[in-house]
Image (cartoon, rainbow over all chains, first blue to last red; front, side):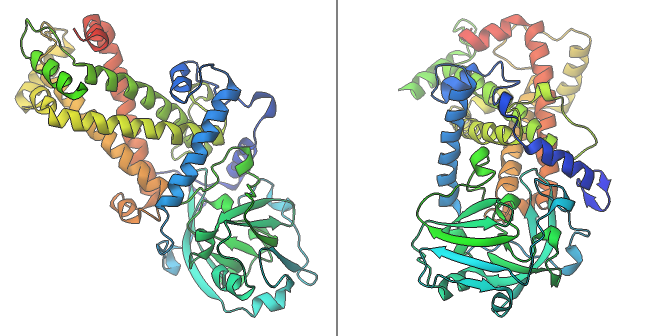
Length: 258
Length: 211
């Protein structure tokens, strides 16, 4: 069994912060080949004839893009993520970000306005009361982190697909990009955005989304890894231009579907 | 056809004067698998370290990828190689009858006798074309571990799209543990396998040049 740390298997807040620091790439030694002295043949198989970090990384990024396409093919938009009973909720639900919990963005709910742009008919900003008036539903699903740990949480909010219909979004567009208050961003493929459990989340465990979990709105995507569930979202843009993402641009697989 | 040539050479392995112990397809898939497995294990250790299941981490020098994203990139690149190569190996192993001929039968009494002989360094390696019971059980075991590691890996990778498979492994968190245990079994096999290959160098030669 995994070691039990404060009720969440495999998760300790202190450890998480340490790990979050480890997540950050170390630019002087983006050593994709580190520890891989015997990997010449891999580079060969990946189509490189020189063993240096740059060409290996290019080959790996090309394979990662291939993996995006493979995962898109495997993705069934009607396939629902498993749901769980209230008793399965992980308490306390772990905080995880690339910043410490105390540094989480502090968004003012009164002046908050969600900007909706790109390929939509109704380009306007949405205040919190307007957003809260949307029909809401609750889901209890598993959040899976790219680090490997998972936790079950309860999120309530509006279906993103309903909202996209309401604002007249071009659902033939390829991507939706989400921009966060502090500058983080991540994007979804349209089939995932239309999946019925993809949610504009306003509540965690029936309470207004707390600051550390992404007040006032996060995008909950139970069919994606955690880093593709952006918090403190202030803008969404429907687009055909690949928007990438904060972690995705640094080497994490873009599709990252579950 | 490569396949018919492979079948022909594997049937030769039955005759001591035929001399071919490992047909070409076995040697090629063996070394591709060795490479894919090493990359999968090293990058898997990198991924493990991001959120350890047990109370230890792997030394950074033993991991591949430099950081989590690099480890994931290597892991999800080498997986195609591992699975494609493993598929070819299983299809040929079954269709040529090599698995049945070389790995079966496994009789408990012979396994015990051969383990005793192995531990006292009295196990014969005169005829490399015939596997002793210890070899049979280890080779069959590692093939099964490889199947388990691929299936548990798929259930960690796609716990929504392949949720029935994930359920078979007892859910996402348990599938991670199964994946880890299968890796441990393969890594343990690898250590024994390499030590024995060094102790019996002609077995290494046979896996390179076939005889």
